[in-house]
Structures are given as C-alpha cells and as structure tokens.
Length: 100
Image (cartoon, rainbow, N blue to C red; front, side, top):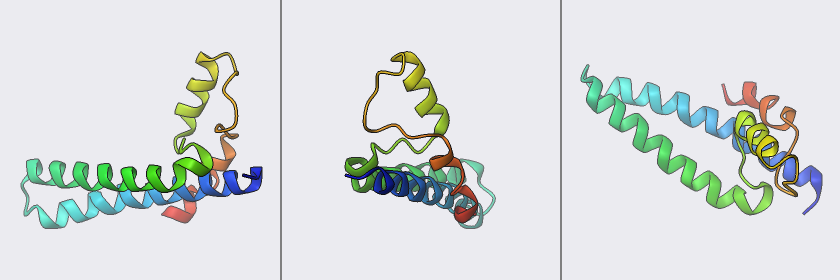
C-alpha cells in the first residue's frame, strides 16, 4: 500500500468519524424527547457501530489511527518504533473541516 493511499484513508476516516460523532449527537438530541439517558445511549451506540465499520474498512489500509493524540501517544510509548500504520498528525487533522 502506498503512503498516499494510507494518508488518504487516514484523512477520510478522521473526517467520517467527526461526521458520525456530530451527527449522532444531533440525532440523539432530536429522537430522545428530552430524556438525557436515551440521548446518551443513542449517541454512544451510533458512534460505536460507525467506528467499528470505519476500523473494519480502513484498518487494513491505514491502521485506523483516526485520533492524532492516540497516534502520538503510541509513537511516544514505543519510542518511535511503530512502523507502517502511523502517519503525521496533519493527515488526521487537516481533513476534519471536511467532516463538519
């Protein structure tokens, strides 16, 4: 897999994850009828399942590190020895406005 494809997959995954988190929050607020517990469960379930799908589809391409903080922490904990799946944080943060 080429680096550009990995970076593209990581960027698309980050943007889609942002769409899902924001969209599931809006959906939960509208469907819950003012019940905060129902809104929290709906938001959590929608986010979990969407994240599962994103990781399943994009994981083999990019490693599915959609959060730059997680990528930096993993790199730091392994003294930078992680190979292949980690990308520069800009591949995860620049596409975020596309998801909004």
